[in-house]
Length: 279
Figure 1: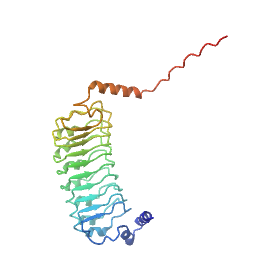
Figure 2: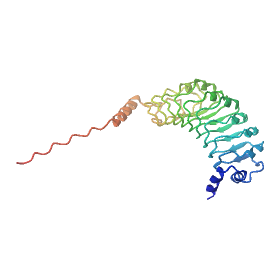
Figure 3: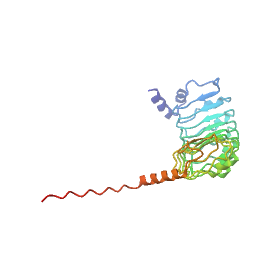
Figure 4: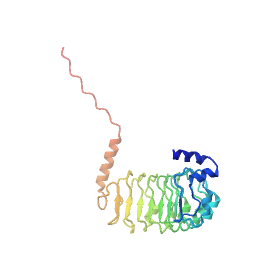
């Protein structure tokens, strides 16, 4: 019943209804955090912007598609969660929050990111998974301190060569995209520690043995005929992962042939001739 009331009130543009949704949030929380996740919000309660010392703001799992310019007053904000909403474009005001370290934008309807995102030079972690991205926005390559990039479950087919500029990048998550080749730019990023290309369309993996910082590579659920060769001590997750240093190519070819044969249409066996009838 409570959730039903909240859902109904989120439709009503009355200040008292928004007051109900956010409870008695009238004073700056002692932990400098506001969590309005799952509150059925369709508009952001502007009075939260009066908490100038706010450090963490969670707005996940609502119905937001815009943010007021007053949000720019929160210049101490370090964590902003906007995932699981209805954003088709990132509100420009987000790009004015220059102390942001972690930005959650996953599970929205984003097709691109604004060039103004480059102003967020303190950003360390960016989540953009499960959006409508067909290419990785170039502006991401300008986030010089970025350490973790979550870009899975989009429609990416390749990565920009400028990504190698991100010398602080340590983990890149690309599962559930449309990559048909292992992204060449990753071969020139020896500082990477985790690479996840699970659930793509990659058929061949080049050697990753030269990536001296690599600790984990996830390549499962690809139609590959080989496993990536890695240096000693690097964990692999995928077909032939337990074989060292990589699977016998004869096994790979044999596996591929068996798989292809299993996909061929089965021709029904001819019926045995009927036994002769006695006259």
